[in-house]
Image (cartoon, rainbow, N blue to C red; front, side, top):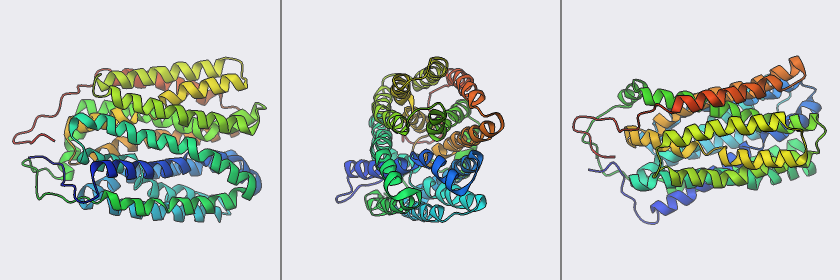
Length: 406
């Protein structure tokens, strides 16, 4: 029997994909603009860069730590409920962040509240419902399309965020972004799942599924490599605007660069989703990590100009979140989709530990040394390590007695 739930009425797989994609567009679009708030908030509130960087680092860590639990709740009680709660917490966190007047308040609002909210409206939870809505041969492509939707959010919402910062300031921008974030809640209506009884001939609890995954060498290698993805993208996303400003580049160069990353990541994530059903996913992931190291090294070592910034953004955009479709598809391929949101959520936790270090170390080492050089070199070296970690992964599905194909 299939583990795929019965879809009824207007909640077709296509509707699930569209609404899930729109949720990711809004959630990731707002989140990718946080780096634009670093300088104005730090200047107005008289904080060093480490303060804002720490808050964003905590956000990523909390997001990752709560993601497996959000995934487990979505697998058990339904994705729609988790998305609604996540959207409300996300919006509340943005409003509270606007009223933060101390470093502790900033950590509790932009760090903890928004971090928990993000766990309910982003890739792992949405990937779970998509994985259960589409057959195995379409999963890689569908997850690629959903990841591209998150990338489109970065491309489409960064100009809005910059316009709001320029016209209503960071306080007004956060309040208006909170209103935009509330739009995710009604979209959850399409994600309601009607399960066809106990469709699994293989009875397995969430705890058993987690222990099975943690004893699988390939899953551990995949999860370890995903740590590096988080380190690289969050360091660059949070600190690139400040890095370019320090080098005398106009603010619009950083905004354009982040937009280009988002735009070309649409191509990158769609492409890896398409390739995932044709090429071993471990080779796709290794190529992405090795490619990032080359791109970052060239950007860091070549003379800086608007042209090199834009070339860097285009190249990095193709590799930005393109790790997500093959990573989540490989988790489904190894263990099935029953606990996909939870297992991909744990993998994402590793990603967010890397995100925490990328955001926080960027601010801390800059405040201590006046330079981002050490973190750039770390990003390059870690990309090589991640590329090597993914090569030996065994992609064969786990064999279970009485297990059904999922």
